[in-house]
Image 1 (cartoon, rainbow, N blue to C red):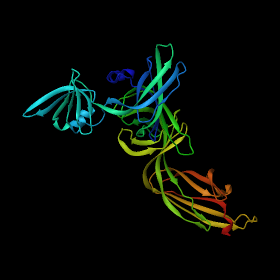
Image 2 (cartoon, rainbow, N blue to C red):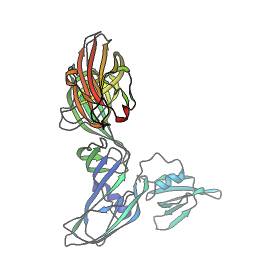
Image 3 (tube, helix red, strand yellow):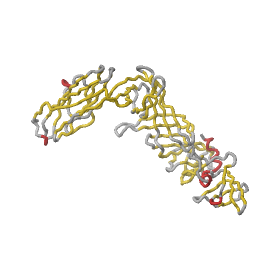
Length: 441
């Protein structure tokens, strides 16, 4: 990586610290570290790209007497689209050797030199090989081209670090850190069906174009999972980033077991506790692929391209974050063969003996499920309830407590898993009780 910056160091007579570590969040936040070892001078002056003010990292083997940073600019290879005007072309060619043609009376004059400065009007300050500086108005310049293999360059925001170190060592390590904002990174999954129970998973990370090259880069990818859940982290050491190009990094290539299932998420039918009211619901089930993450690393949430056994595209979908040894569901296009109808009714109401509590209401729920397809399907159903489930009235449903309350009532999640034969209809019943507010009596 340090070799990549030799050319720039010669141009500016000050080295630019290369990128060594990047902690990259999926929302675009980025914590970076830059470091290198340089022959010790006093003061030691280096340049650091970026808009955020860098912080010097401690180096125990050196006695840093003082250090300071000041805003500066850095020349970097241009990664933009081709210039749309001569002025823009020259602005990108600062530090490069160019050939200029401009009219002088009835003739044309030619000039060659190094571009030192271009102002907002396009006026050019050119330094000839003799050291003479020439200022040309931008409106006169008609033709301009690069000489030899001089690259396009651009001036970017940066910082100049001046450091005084008290040490007998012949070289000094300089390390700085800071925060920046980048376009978000994305996870892309390709899922190919290999048989009735196995799929091949290929997961890649897409990084946006970077303004500089970096190798070896120690890359940490961070993906948020919501306010109440910890972030997930992936470590990718020894990565190579080429300036101006979007990078696609391989995270995982493996096989996993899968099951073709239908899923239905039903609502809580209690619309209000005061005044107490219920509603009805009917809908369809969503076909999904259920995969089991058998790897030691989590799968990041991202887009999915689903392929059949011949490698032909079947569908596009999304995969949620899936921890190791856990199940992830990839939703496919909505289907109508699985019809569901849900209703609840008040079975009884008992007056509470406690004056601080309202009446206790027992509700009976009935879920009608019909398989209108020509094949057997596996169906997973989830439904939250407000209140306490009655175990003797749940059948084969599972009841899991939820981390929330509604009034004085706990909340639970009811779950069913069943196989439906072609054309079959099942009726599932459950019961639970809840307490109404005192004002509801």
